[in-house]
Amino acid sequence: MRFPDFSEIIRWIGIIFCGVGIILVDILWTILGWKLFAGICDAFSSFGFVPE
Image 1 (cartoon, one colour):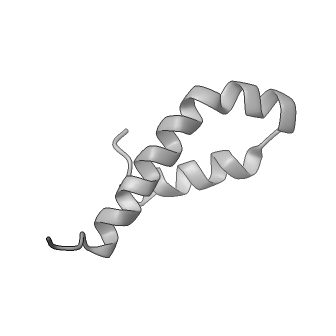
Image 2 (cartoon, rainbow, N blue to C red):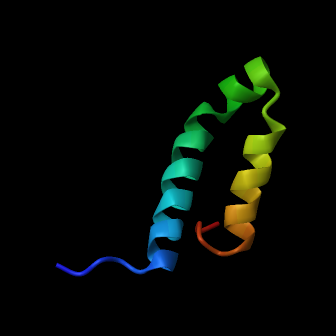
């Protein structure tokens, strides 16, 4: 069993993080004003880890 390489791990973290975040973002934005979350998700997208 091979270990996935680092970029693959980061890509999956980004997909999971942003995928879950997209579901919750309206709630979180309303409750917490969570601009940090949006910044992190944008960072993942800009590095190409998350498909547009």
